[in-house]
Image 1 (cartoon, rainbow, N blue to C red):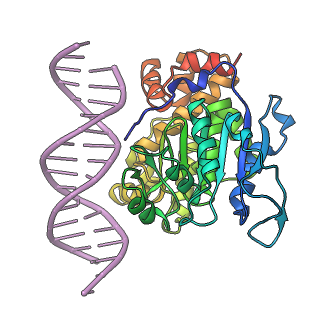
Image 2: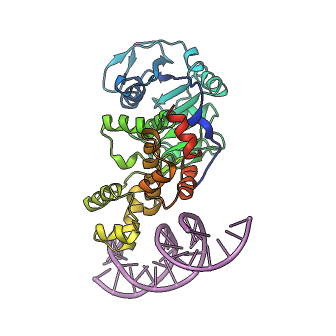
Image 3: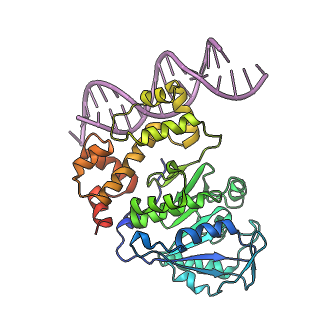
Length: 330
DNA sequence: ATCTTCGACCGCCAAT
DNA sequence: TGATTGGCGGTCGAAG
């Protein structure tokens, strides 16, 4: 699994800059913008924590036309981008149009000052134009991957992933993958428990919640078969048991070879690898919400020993279980 | 740190 | 004819 430079300690960052700025423009992609507003702009008092401070900045003077025929207004002070902790690029109106230099400058400054920048769908072309993706892995909507690759050959385009996390530069595929990437960021900031509550409010499919892998592979390209979904639910309810591929295949009433193949096609990871990711997520939740010992959590999450838990935990999150607990259970 | 064992994964291919 | 299935075996990595 490819790994690239990342701010591995982001999970234990001390005083996060929680200002999130979404970049609007004439011809705004309404859905992608809506994803950003919903995830970061909706007040969530029920979580009992300080949520993000969400703002919108436009590169064009209003009124801005939005996809769907509405118009909106937004302030145009691009300085807000340079002060943001997180910048969201919710698409771009035309992948062939060079974004305004003022915007690219603001993004470069923000990046230099440590801000995270995430793109949804065609928003990746803005990051690319700013040169912030050179030598890095990135993704976008499958309709644009070829164009992105030919226009920016120095970018390592990943066509088959939901999103790519380079630490401070994050890109996501088709519109809805922006939700997955946003949840991934929220998980980095606030832990799996909070992120799962947000996901539940959004009613997104649970198996897309994933772990903290930097690299989440493609969503289903074929219609999901009901038996596979049933089996996935079954596995999620039996994480603490010893489950082999044969057990899974038997539950799905398929041969193990066919099960493994179908599983990989639909979820993008091999069955056991996915199982391990789910177990790490379970361990994260237990670390955040209980005072149980690491040993006990390891057993409950289905790992044979605390050493095994630590091994996989570190691989997925780049931190140790106890550091993780300290960061999210203050 | 190193070794052994065992299961997972995946390419290949024949059968359906 | 093309797509799907499932068995085989080599390789790799996890677990202890």
